[in-house]
Length: 418
Image (cartoon, rainbow, N blue to C red; front, top):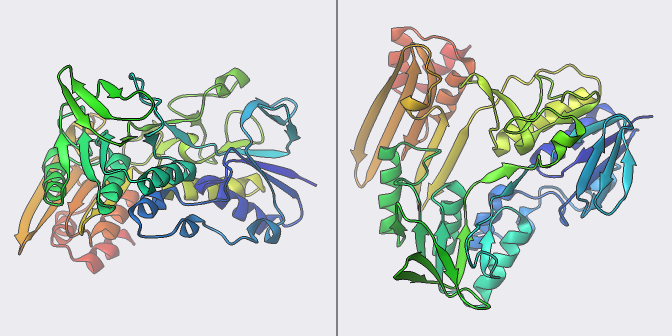
């Protein structure tokens, strides 16, 4: 009988577990997780902070999940050794588990702030449920002002949650644009203007130098003579895959843990999926880490199937982000700026900005010849499914087909993909 071990219980781990049980209901299945909580949605933590949902709604499966699938889940396990020769996993506290098939789905961790005051108790990142609960506790204790450091998606979703809770929020961004990994300058300016109307303050091209306070946060110093008073600081400076130390055990490492189209690593019987895995990018045509929930769930399912002897092929990942702030939606997929292409082929872009009433709608399409390689939608995002499908197919479109796409005739565009 087999022994499957899955390290990690977030999106990739959870979907792998369920897929393994679809194909093998008898073998031993062990889940090792550094978390102290059952599987939950990281995507919903900001909704919890905003007060939109209770903490109980973060959980992804019912309380009888482990019993129903005949799983052994071991919480609070930090894996620090993987021995491919002995087929063994070891934790920091010395416990060992032996596997027949292993999935590494340890995800990513938030980047910390390395400035004076960065370890004060009211300085947080938002990556885990524990982070969200700790931030919520500070809010319940009466925090009135917050500084969010970073202009990425997690930063702005955190700032949005705090603003909905009634805090004064200032967003400090080192670059000249918010959401620089997701949007172009024009669409980012639209989102920023909308957030300003809803009470956000922005300081672009600004660095946090020091977080002031003896035992508790009092402010964020941005110049030798300028300090922003605050009770709470949230740091959103990106994440890094949890690959530290894995190269010591002979794994091939790039931006993440390198896998092939079956999501297998270079070691026999060991697979990787989710935010730790470096996979083929369908649009950029290179291996990279696309750390999104949909990518992780698909990778987890396919890895789980292949651990059970199936021969499923992972077609590749896409960079995909979406958000809604106070009723204004934005979404981007694939390449969103011409300068981000791989330098081959004839690249072009088409932009369309329309105002309907008080709402502006922006659409940008990125083309490589006659192949759609990316888009940005702000306001009306109803075309997102069709456009994403066209990107995944990756086939050239005739001029007539391109015209149909530009005319937003969704049903006809779906016909193109068949």
